Length: 301
Image (cartoon, rainbow, N blue to C red):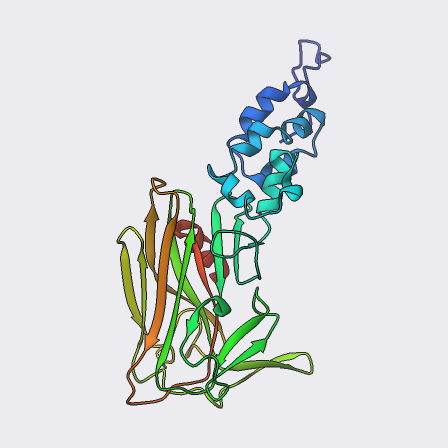
């Protein structure tokens, strides 16, 4: 886009109106079709663009219809008298919540995608019911910067493996994908380098882990994955050890007709004929399905 619009007459001396002469209301109409990052970039051009980029009508169109439900997770003094643009910026940062009620410990987080304004969620392993989690012979909590919750559950060895969780939340109408974020092997930093230890990693190549999800309106999905296999993977090479991998469980649809949606999810491998261990459980992600696929393709490029 040029910095001005020119209209030359016969003598070549007549100069037409510039971008600064475009009515702010017209610029705001154009901004309704742009993404928040694009709007912020164009706001630098001139006063008209800057004014339109601060318009409440523009930013309200970028917020989900039930954005007030998200604001209810924040103390009133943090959003009182904010413009819609500032509300979008506030909700685009991760907000900790406790089962959709008041702000609690950072065991669950919700935020708006900065490009689409759609709702995303992450649930910490600490918010899940994990069999044997209180027995240090089986599980340990490991602090790490590789988790948005700064800690992950590490399984040393167990026979009965089961992780369950649920969340109740006023999800806006959309199609969502639920996935578990897992890592084979225990990782540390040594002399500034990331080092993985597979001393306890075993048992995940014998039988698959079963993943399930269900919703309060009767939707269900299930799948199975072998977490440790030697088949060549396009993303992770010859094995899946040493990488954080998102295992997609399935999708569910929110129509918006119900005030809240309860989502239950689990992963289990309860065949007691063999033990398994050496697995890190970080979190569960709930993200709009096409948004998840778009981000995954960007990572693979």
